[in-house]
Image 1 (cartoon, rainbow, N blue to C red):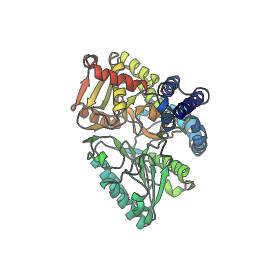
Image 2: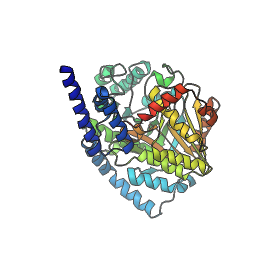
Image 3: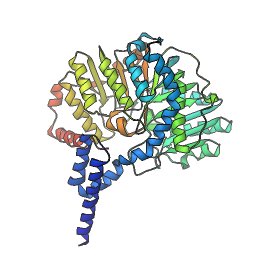
Image 4: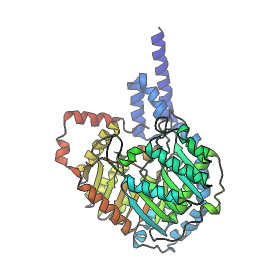
Length: 477
């Protein structure tokens, strides 16, 4: 009798969740179908999975205020630049920016992503180089240090970063550290692990401390020092990102920026910091006075997440792909695109554009890996070329179009980054930066294996089953 009551209760909960999904959450039809299958085919665990991964209805209440505040801060910048670009009055510092004017205007319109042009960019593909540069910037800080990372591990690298921040805090430098509650969960990082920084006077913010929710995580990786130097990319803070974890050598991409785009990184940090802590820094001039004009690279800092009305980073990717005339080169650890991205890549390849996608040869999340292979397989017959990176784990999130424009940041090519997590990318329009990223891509080709259509069709029955099951549930979220 008790068992029957329990089963009845679970089924009733699943029906309630199903009604919520269909009538209130206005999900993508594919995701809706996947969730209904989980709830009714796996009733004992369906409601648990929904509590962990679902409940998009609550997003409206959680993040609508954040969206409104973010847009209000950006409105003045947006109106000024919108007038210039809409009227074709602005003359860009590079011919590439002129060529991709439509992409720039799109990201300004749908994300208030201000274009800055006085920038210099340094690209890092090795953790040792990126963190050497970050430590150097921290040691040279005089006024403030702002770090925002998904993961800050309690290991050798994490502790070294915390110690360096604490030393600067003791010198009187303002230090703010923002990390995600799930990414830096206990065991990987915790408030206790950051006690040295807190005791030294540094400020710590924990993003969305709802440990049971897998969605709506702050996946951004941003650092701003004195408003002069900024970092953005795919590296988190931990030994894994130096190649000292179970996945071995780590291949990632991040950029160091000096110039006006650092102000946009600073603004992104403060908007997130205000949301988490309630602290209002009033966007004082002293935090934004270090711009200068050290270079000529045009950059837009583009943010995406549940607090954005549309999907700015994905739409930026789509616009770049649709603008390609010669080549599209993508690196990503997770490739679970929606139909719009798949169609854009397929159409580009069928139009004669050289489209190449590089993914890891090994999974850190097997479910996602097999789904990635499935979606890659769909594109091979259209002429898209795909490769597995064989020299460690590929974690870079990049796109380069025609060797002239592209993006580097935290957003993977999957539904989680496009819809559910808070992300930040730098979009650039400069042949010099494009050439550097293409040089890194081509070097990676030397240690990669191409997935040919023949190889893909010859995969084993076991692989086919893994792909089918993983793909079936890939829209969940």
